Length: 96
Image 1 (cartoon, one colour):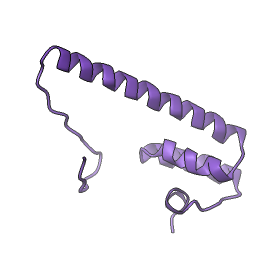
Image 2 (cartoon, one colour):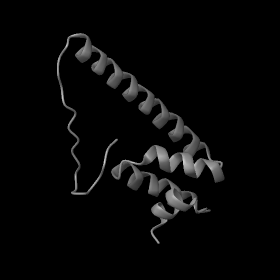
Image 3 (cartoon, helix red, strand yellow):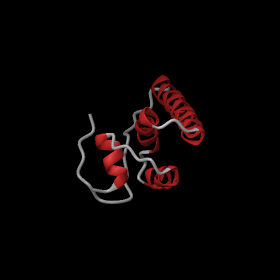
Image 4 (cartoon, rainbow, N blue to C red):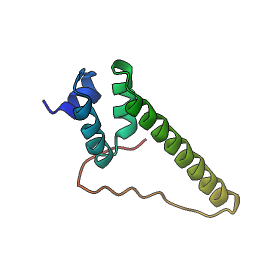
C-alpha cells in the first residue's frame, strides 16, 4: 500500500523523518496536507511537522474566513450565484 494512503487512512506509523517530510510534498500536490499533518502529528513528535501543521491550520482558517466574506457580500447584494468545482483530474464525487 502507498505510504501516504496508509498514513492518512490507517494512521500507519513511519519512523523515517525524511520520508515524512517528503510525503508532505505529495500531500500538498494531492490537496490533503492538513489531513496528512493532523494524522502524522498524532504519532510523531517533530518540530517540522508541528510547525507545518500550524501553518496549514492558519491557511485553512484564512481560506474559510475569506470564503465566508465573499458569500456574505454576494448574498447581501442579492447576487444569485452558483459554486462550480473543478479538479485537475476526472473523478466522481457527490458534494453535500
